[in-house]
Image (cartoon, rainbow, N blue to C red; front, side, top):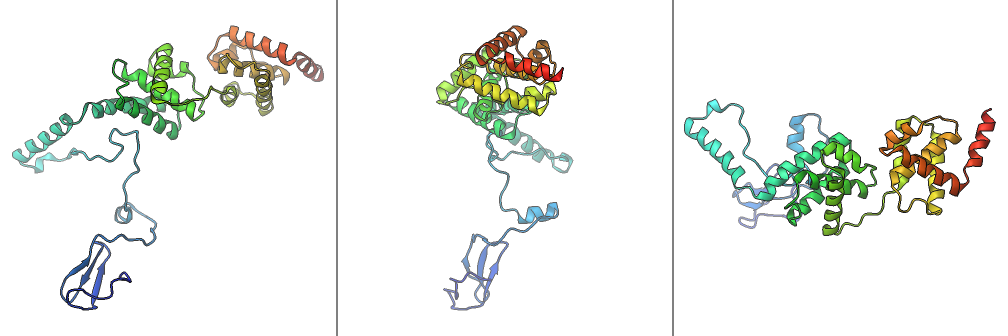
Length: 308
């Protein structure tokens, strides 16, 4: 079907027109004039059943992504599998092109190539969602473009960007976990994280202890009732302002410990501390605060009597 607005050939006045769908052209069969070219096909997409059909029917490539140094838009002189078919002169030219393509890339591109590979490795180790990986790559790219990486190790900025992305997407990961995955000291990651977020104007809300409950409960193999009760305890603690100024992991672990005692699921403070990545002293202190301020002693005693 030829576009409705084209009725006849402007050169010879003929109406014998042909629409070449593959090339997006309208041609007059009488005089050969190309009346229209580069036409966009607005018809529906068709399903793909094999790779050949996919190549023919797709109109676009992969989506843009910050996890690649050129956002997936660049081209590269590829590696030909069989170079024996090329002559000596062509082979040398091929290698020279590859070499110069790498040499003429900017310092930012070279930095991003290395950093984004490290970012993917750490994200894979921590099992982070794709959205977090994409956001962290965007933050790191902005940091490089603003010159914030200069004077700091690439690995520490990568870890800081990942931690910032986790906080923005409310994916609970501690500085200890990032330190273990990246091999950078916890203090250095925290320092870099604060510097990058401040310089880039990224506003991040404080961590919510509730976000850590499902992970800790799963690791400790606690019942759903225990998990729900711990969230209820945390909500009461937030109203009583017991969570402000305290580490979210410590208060979340203590709430789980109290909830486990209420439901008769015996877990030691050592077990809970190991899962949360805090000390037993922290668990003990937060546990005492929750009992004193929220009057949970009576509830623990009642449940003990019921089970006896």
